[in-house]
Length: 157
Image (cartoon, rainbow, N blue to C red):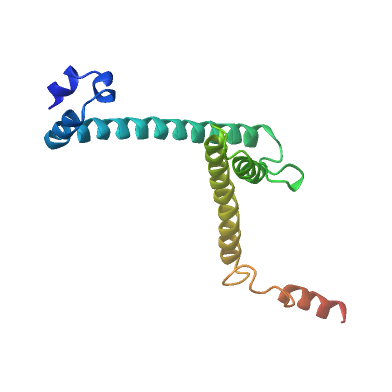
């Protein structure tokens, strides 16, 4: 069947008679060419999206390395901002060819943002556990610190 595909030109499939379409369907020639086209398109789209993800990650990594505050200058997360702007841009420009590019960039930036914030949260909890402050960091919020209570007791002596 691969030899058959090499013989037929794209114009062959565009200008087929009803009888020829029926024959191609019976022999499986229609499915073979359709499948190749679908897989080739998906491979190209996957390569494009991976490229966008790599570029987005590389740009965010460069910003993180170059800025003293990393990706959070003045408390504003650059990766989170790019994710929101990309998502809003994709929604607003839904009819444009580049809407999916904005969506892909937003997804990549959101992944970096989620990774950083989850890492920071869990690292802080792990550090608190290691320091012996509590079983779970943050569960003692609102309670008086035992060290401060002891210091106040010393002041009252």
